[in-house]
Amino acid sequence: MSNGASTVSNGASTANNGPVIIKLGGEVVQGPHMPAIAADVAEMRGAGVPVVMVHGGGPQATELQKKLGQTPNIIGGRRVTDGDTLDVMKMIVAGKMNVDLCAALVAAGAKPVGLHGASSNAVLATRRPPKHVTGGGPDPVDFGFVGDVIGVNGELIALLVSAGYVPALACLGADASGGVYNINADAVANQIAIRLDARALVLVTDVPGVLRDVSDPTSRIGRMTIAEGKQAIETGIVTKGMIPKLEESFAAIEEGVRAVHIVGRVARGDLARAVTSPGSVGTVLVA
Image (cartoon, rainbow, N blue to C red; front, side, top):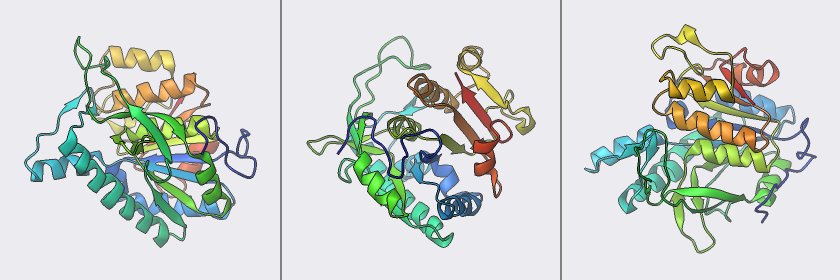
């Protein structure tokens, strides 16, 4: 297992033939655009492009928590995870959502393999210490069983990709002693992109990109720099779950990811267009 900048086979450590990392929010996996996304992934794989998928399941986890009588605790767009919440995340993210994503990819002709952090430490993590977060108030926040990625099993991912499979990673991490942690799916995707030297990182959400006005889909911002993004957060243009998405993305860019593409409500072919024509679909985030 490699905890550092692992590479995918077939030369994936170079800019031209590294993997495409695609992250899907839970609302996307079970949304109307999933067939188009799955078809694009199958087409890319058929063309020899290595693809690694990462997914979340936030809305579904919140729904199950409420059914179980739990009160979701979201601070600054991030979920506080106690023991009961962690059980929900295991059931939803590593269970239902991973199965549904793999089923959609199979239907499109791809060959997915579902994984989570405890799958041979596919995502090696450590428990996050209390920290200050945007929107979290003046004191450090203890998020409970929430982890930070410290390694990726690049050898496992390379083995699957080289055989034509599509690794589909649930956003759970694990440590060497078997502790399991809930991790923001954007953070998982960003770290995988960094450590596998991805050719592209695409975050697929339920909005068509970063918007100047959340109620107006035509207010999409095609290109955004780190400075512009920080200003948008400070002035309140960007709110709620888009805040950690941008902050995690900018951190990834500062660590070497060339660009992050935020797309949503995609039609057939949009994933490829986002990569080949940055800014034409969604929002491309750059240094």
